[in-house]
Length: 404
Image (cartoon, rainbow, N blue to C red; front, top):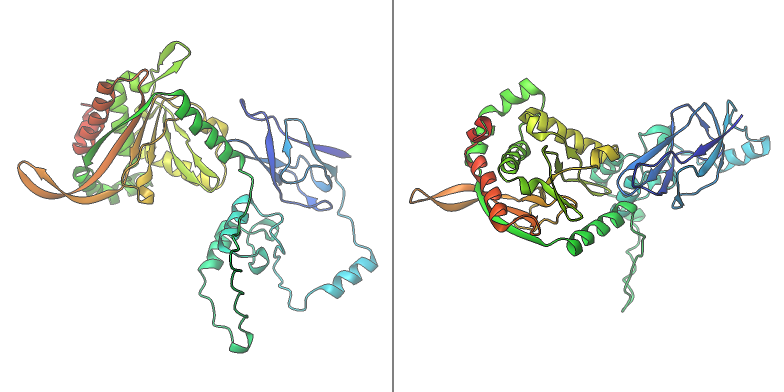
C-alpha cells in the first residue's frame, strides 16, 4: 500500500519550513520510525519519520524547497522490498567498483549529510568521500569530521606530493553567494525588530567574583558527586537575576499594545550557541529551581541545541534573558533585547584586575556586566538598581541562599 509522506503540523506561528536534507534515497528500504528527512523551521529542526516498514518509492520535494503543513514530500510503499538490480546492472556496478573499496559504508559525496556536517566539511575544505562515517547508513557525524581533521597528516612521498596550487590570478576577487538559513533569517528579523521597535538603552557595572569562585572551588567536587552535574557560574547568575526581578518587577514585564504586563513568574531565557545560530531556550519557574536543577537544565539545553533537538516549547515565552559572551572572550558588549521581553543581562569574560578594596589595591577576578532594557517601561533608576542587585548577590552569595 502506498503511503503519502506529508509535512507534519508545524508549530504555532510557523507557517512554512525548508527541506534541509533527505537521509534516504528513492528505492531504499526503511523501517518504522526511521528518520527520513529533516525540515528546518525558523527556530527548530523537525524530523519526518517513516510511519511503516517499506521502501521509499518516490521523493517529490528536493532539499532546499519551501513546504507547508500537509504538503506531500514523497511516497512510501508499505511492506515492499527494495528493487533488486538486474544482472546487467549488477555486472556494471561490479565492474566499476574500486578494488580498494572499504568494507565499511562511506558516503561518496556531501549528499545525504546533515546541514551541520555539510557546513563543517565546507569550512575545513574536506570531502565526505575522504572520511568513514559512523552514523546510521554510513552517514557522517560532526564528530567524525572533527576527528578526521584533528588527525596528524602523514608525510607523503616526494614523488606523490601534489603540485603547488596555482597562484590566484592578479585582480581575481572570489565571492560565494549562499542563501540565509531560516534560523539566520529569523535572527536577523528579530534583531532588526528589537532595534526599530524598542527604546533600548544599556547600563553597565562590574562584579567581583572572588566569593563565587571560592565557593565553587570549595564545593565543586562534593556538588558533582551529590548532583551528577558540575557547579558552573550560570546558576549563580540566574539566581541573582531572579532576586533582582523580584525587587524590580518592571524589569520582568513586557508591553502589549498600550498595556504593561507584569509577570508573576520568572522564566529565564538562556542564550545558547548552536551550529545553526543563537537560540534561547527557556528555564521556566527559575525561582523554584535549585542550583543543581539550573545547572542540569543548562547542560540539557546545550546538548539538545547541538543535536537540533530543541522544540518550539523550549524556545517559546520567557520574561528575561541572560547571554554569556564571555565564553568566546568578549570583555564588553551591549546585548540586544529579545522582544517582547524588556531586559537582558550580558555576562562577559573574567579577568584578574587591580581594584581597591577597603582602601587597599588588590587583584580580583572581575567581570563587566551589561543590562540592556526598554526605556519605555523601565526607568534608568530601576535598571541600574536591578543590575546593582545582581552584583551584590554575586559578591555575597550567602544572599542568594538567604534571599536577602
